[in-house]
Figure: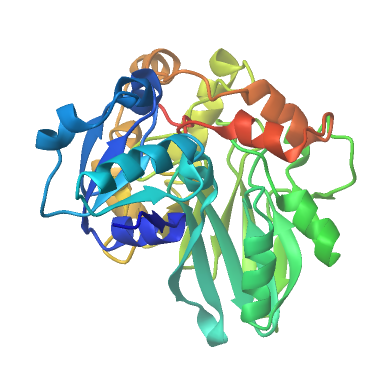
Amino acid sequence: MAVKAMSPKEAAQKVMNKEDLFILDVRNTDAFEDWKIDGHKFEYLNIPYFDLLDGVEEIMDKLPKDKDILVVCAKEGSSVMVAEMLSDEGLDVSYLEGGMKAWSEHLEPVKVGDLTDGGELYQFVRLGKGCLSYMVVSNGEAAVVDATRMTDIFIDFAKEKNAEITNVFDTHLHADHISGGRKIAEAVNATYWLPPKDAEEVTFEYAALEDGNKVVIGNSTIDINALYSPGHTIGSTSFVIDEKYLLSGDILFVDSIGRPDLAGKAEDWVADLRESLYKRYKNLSMELTVLPAHFMIIDELNEDGTVGEKLGTLFAKNHGLNIEDEEEFRKLVSENLPPQPNAYQEIRETNMGKITPDDEKQREMEIGPNRCAVR
């Protein structure tokens, strides 16, 4: 049988549609345990490639006969070879085109909803990294929020919508992924906005995103209201869009809250984090839909593939919003932290414009799961 390639987009659709898939991951065990393709109904078998060099006969009884099988490795090559061996044994299998490297870079655009006077809001779900980006489209104009370094998808998507990107925002200086915001702004001659308290060391010009800013996209139909909400970083800024949606950056997630330590300031910023979540957010409408910049686990995806939840629901159910004792809160956010993101200091310096790694280096810097939340 011929071995088929499954594109990252096809794999993403299986995640979004909650389809069955059996994944044979042939990376080393530590790489697999650290980071894999998450799916609601996926099953997994991890056998390192080097254990299969003499053949696949010993694992045949561990593979299903009635499910799609996808062989996965880091960059594609090993998975092609294993898939060919399985095909020779009579199994119908696919390999992941481009491997986990390509999976890390795939973005899946999903419509969040309609805005007043005809505008639309889209969420770009980066399933392999847990990153969430956004685009507001209204009356021929578009704004992008928290873009990834895969900039073409945002520029091409705006063109499909017959919209010109006029403004690009980062809610904060990212430490877990390389921002594409400045690159998009330069490519389409848009304004690039960054919170000034996060931008003291940047090497480029930007528009200062400050508390109370209103940026109009389209025919005065959409206000993007900036809400200063420090804690994850000292400059972290949230947006209220169309009085319906709260883009919370990395301050508040559906299942957790943002970590305050990625600039080495955990002790200093815990109070800011609590102030933003327990006072500033508490004063907002509980009917706002919170749209974060990341998600942690696949179960956070809604039925339509979006990630988001009403603010009132999060105040009722999110443990991080329900810790009355300040010392207990401090302990939670300073002691329950996952490992630092890969190369987070280099990523910060890249986003400041201090260093300019080539594309392959940028891929390496980002490899691995998202780690922006308190556990």
